Figure 1 (tube, rainbow, N blue to C red):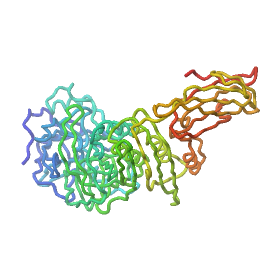
Figure 2: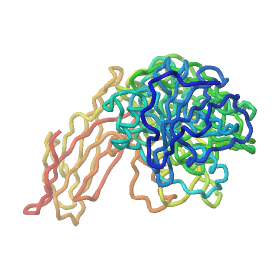
Figure 3: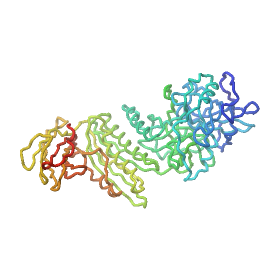
Length: 606
């Protein structure tokens, strides 16, 4: 029989209103190993302070080990109306070694034996805001059991970011754990989900994970990324491996970029399993891969909480529900996947690499664009064998279907050059276009694949920068000026000097010209620009999905130098010239049209 670590006697009978005395009840810790049978669930109404129980989790390998748990009480309606929070104190050799529960322990079941019957109380799901703790929150087992009966249209209430603890609750926790009230944090939050990311373990991997982490934080995902191993979509496991307390992975992709959240199985029942005790992405209806995993170790982190390092192993089915009380897996066929393929060449190493990532079908508009961008981001770093500035060319095609099943396709080629991260710069435009496609409101679309058909990168930084601009009006002398006077119908010629960044390139001079409309009545300004002349990837003014695709296909590439005459908010005239090298920078020239006309504000210098 498992017992709690010895401690001072509790000086109160119940922590919360409605929690009864425990002295008259014969509650003992559970003493049997977890099974794959449907659990007997203890109603929250029967959960009382002082119950001693046993939980199961994995700290290394894939065999669940027991830990001791004492119920501290129930916090009614703490998270949502009708959603009670069960507080508990937990201990084991592994838990004590790292100072408390770890990220990846979410879903670990806790049982008590009541009247000779082992009953599931709940699953580990919440912890204090900062650092590891032995006092944690359990998601009620009966809330998880209800998800087994969910259909596709089951509601998904909004999940609060954190649950604040009342002053009286802080006092009760302090008394139960024999610490000062000041040491009890004022809120309890969902434990973060450790996410295994393959391809980010080498030099520069920490920068890659930091960039991905920041983006996921902005999306609202409560995750902790770590460098893991890749896993093929075809690998299989057996549901018999998914016993309560075993490792559970919810995979968003397989292959070169394997991206999977790692937690713990709570229970399985009638061909399904519940895990995590809280959401992953909180999608409601979902389609993730359900996988087993092998825990390598618990990585200690006394500041932000330790987390489980694990590799994703075989697939057991599909995660089809992502709900407040946990994720639900249906055993059987894995979900369908969408391929991302690539051919990437790095001139500095002479290496060419073919890549494949299979993204699990998902309704989340964020997931596929995010993973497809980072697939190629990692491919570039792997082939260059460095994380630096550089230049290159990228050609890609994205395919999909419309709501009526008809196909659509978008292909584009561009050039890049940067003093900073060429891997990021190369996928920057693609990334923006993908999110524009996924968030547009013209039609419901589905992505069916992405091919990075030809990506070539080098460490040499090769681009021009707009330097000097000389101006001539109606055939007059070219002058260096920030202001010119012109008449309606005038032709304004521009002689643009381009300075090279690369010493192997020579200075270049190009000529452009714009014409003032004959009906112009206001002053304006000319913008001379390198590249597209607007923030990369932002394509506005589309009237339909087909129009959006066309604007993306024909959007100005980075190897462009152009000039646009703007009068008010409208572009009165523009000219673009394609070069064989990326062009950056720009310059503005104020145009006074006619005499005595009302003018626009002059553009800022610089």
